Length: 400
Image (cartoon, rainbow, N blue to C red; front, side, top):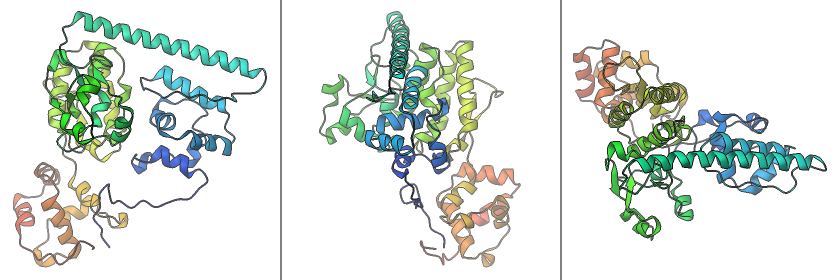
């Protein structure tokens, strides 16, 4: 049976284990391929690994302490290991991390060493914050900035044209914590002025909040502008790798992003960078687009040798993706050869499944994706026109 589904109604098989609450808080919005398995979770606190930062953030910022404490106690994990992960997260990343403390650190004489180690991490972290603030202050001092607006990852949580890229807006509304340019971060005002800024007051009115009273501004960055601001702040102002944007294709719902527009603006941004900053930007996207396994990461390709300034471009994803994303039973997913053969058939040869696939092509695949597919597989225009226009009786229903 074929069942069309999307992120909202996708059925996920449940798996019962003693650590299911911990795993649920770690994995709840990540794609299945990136889910933390129980065996890996048991080793999560053995050593700090930067690529696992999204899970660490979940643990310290979103997971109830009771769930974390139960997981630690149930699996006999040394609490000092947990503290070590927390301190390294503060020291080695730019994430804002909630405070984490525990009373029974270790026993007897080891307790002194642990406290000293914690104080050392705090000193190093405070120095890091001071250095970052100096760089921001110097930039603001040397540039005339007149705008004030909400940006960075906070902007992902505010609906723009009815689309929201991060569904943690409830937590944002609860804490009333908003990242502002140029107070908390430095956006790309010197390059893009007011491009990508919009009045978000109507949304906050619907949530019974006066955003101007809370922040001193009604302006918010669109998702594209927020991405540009993060890249500008981290690479141009702070001269560091933009860790907070890692896996943004997978971790945020970027379905409605206009990638052509995004990478056109990134090309402009790149032209304002020096050679070392360009190298950071190139490294980020080369790694990001190579490692990401999300559906939408396939739409963007890195192209260092491309003529002109735009080193990144949009690549239409395969129509195979549109077809298989609409088929709930993975055993019935098509391969490329099956789709190619479909273009050789006539209407009298179509079975129920063929008609379903053709309907997907007609209603859900973009013209760019279809054109790229037929060109790549040498399918004639005549065959394409036939498949896209031939009249057929849809003898299947939505439950097939």
